[in-house]
Each structure stands twice: as structure tokens, then as C-alpha cells.
Length: 402
Ligand SMILES: [Cu+2]
Image 1 (tube, rainbow, N blue to C red):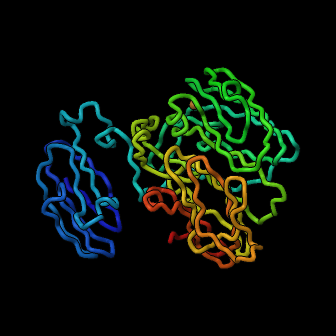
Image 2: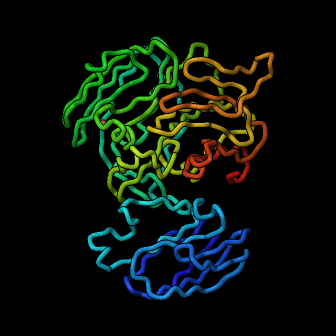
Image 3: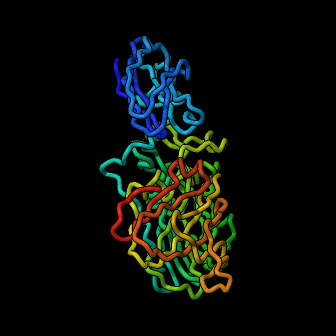
């Protein structure tokens, strides 16, 4: 069988191919990138491709699943690996086609979202009027696209992971009705509350409900999550969200955005996430509002001259967040209940990055003076390369990542 293969920075496209056991494998390879790349079966006897070069590789019969990769230093680790999956052999008995050797789904960074996919609107509305916020949160276990070409069974509050961002003011009361429409025990733990955990955070059976009421006594960006054991699996499989309690005298801005960071630990296509990978801290993606590179695929728009406030909650189970926006400096930073920086400071300070450990939150503010395409990222580089990026497009500018 002959396959077309493209090499570029830093990918192999397609990233995986399937071939019947014993079939002869030929590859028509083209380097469309700007650097030299190579390709070798198991990294051995690599063929060298200068930019623009093409050649056909003949690797003969393939009897078992294997890999080929670019042997230039660092390129394999950056993603230049071709998975060669053998079908129909004894080793493949019972295996899912399209699945990796461990059966888990994999993210193709070059794929595009499905036609039916819609981004979560990150626009944050002002806190609803009134001192009492009555909210219904239904636990739903459902299928959701979490990256282009990858669907998982996620456990959610109201059908999305993250669940809805709730918002109020200091002194307001939240009366949350939690309804378990799932197939197992679930619960909710609001970090915004001071309540007896054994009462309001108790697990409820499928079909049951509880009322969780608390007064928001402190301003903050607070995580909420399921607390049923293994908690790492319930939280890591989608049961998280944020409650924003505005600090007093919060100035009005032109645009408010809410971002919640989490991770992807992919299980098999269509199935729940992989608990073993969670325990090992080996994620497949780090994402804002639940989808790999979500706002690269569907950029956030603002007007030139807008003052923007981005609320950020790190609801990841393992990963910290270094929130940075390329081409902008934050003149205001508020973290874990207090201002780190205000624009009227005599010190003329500016902030480049807001650091948030798991379940810390805050906001940053800036003014966008120039039309352009601004990339926001988790500046922990391994996370940025795994889906923790998005675009803010100001004015009439093309959407492009930098
Ligand atoms: Cu749960």
C-alpha cells in the first residue's frame, strides 16, 4: 500500500496510518516545512528531506504495529511521529480500528473541529440582579467532542465541561439545586462556600437531588467540582466549573471573558477519560473551557480601544497555569481575593503573567490599543503545545497565532 505523507514543523501528516498485517508499505513523502526533516522506521536509516524535497520510501512488508519518526534532535518529542497500525493480525484481535496501541484516542493537532461543534461562548455577563441566585445544576453523563476528531464520555454539570460560570456579589446567596441524572453517585463542592462538607457536599444517588445553599462572604474566582471518590476521576472527567464573586467597586469594562483551564486524559474514543494517566500526571491536552485550542478554532473578538477583563480559574487536577497574552501587558491583576496590581499605581508597574495553582483564580485587565491578533496561552510551554492557547482578535485583523 502507498500513502502520501507530509512533513512540516513539527508534524507528520497524517499522524497515523493503518495497514493490513504483512502488506508492503510505501510512502510518498514531501517536506513542506522550512527546515530539514528525516523519516526512519523505528528511527533507523533515516531518509533526509530538505525543505521542498520529495521521495518515495519502500519499507517492505509490515507485520506488527510500529512507529517511524523524524530523527532530527527534538523533532520526535515535538510531535513528528508516524504511528503505523497493523490490522487483521493476531495482535489486533479485539482492538478498535483508529485507536492507538493502548486503545486510547489521540489528538491530531492539525485536525479541525467537526461541523456540528460549537465553541463555548467565553463572554461573561454581569452578575444577575438581586441578592438570591437560584441555580439548577443537573449532572449529565454525555458524549462531547473535546478535541478535533476526539469524542469522550464526560461527566458534566448542565451538559458542558466546564459547567456554567456562576456570578454574584459579596453578600449574595446562591441556592443551588443539584440533580443527579447520571448513572452513579455524584456531588458538588463549592470553594466559594463555608458550609459543613458532610452535609451539603454529600454524594447523592442517581435520581436524587439536594439543595446546596451558601452566602458568598468573600470575593474571588472559586472552583466548584464533584467530590465523589475517586475525586481525581470525577473532577478530571468534566465535573468542574467556576463561581465568580465580584469584589466591591469593580470598575465597568467593555468586555469580560471567562476562561477555565482543565486537562484531557483521553480514554478510548467515545469512552471516559483514563484514570491511570491522571494519577501519573500524563495528560494529552491542557485546554481552556474544555476544548483543545478552542479559541484558535473560534477566536474571541474585541474592538480596538476596548478595555478587557479576563477572569481565569484553574480547575485542572494537576497542572499549574501561567496565563499570558502575547503582545499585551496587564495593567491590573487580581488574584485570590486581592489586587496585585492597579493601573493608578505610582510605580507604573506592568504584569506579564498570572500564575495560578490548581483551584486558584483571578482576573487580569488590559486595553487593546492596536488592531491585531493576540494569542493568550498557558506559558508553561509543554501545555501551550498541548492545546492551551486561544486568540483575541481586535478590529479588522486576520486571525493568526503568534
Ligand atoms: Cu461525580
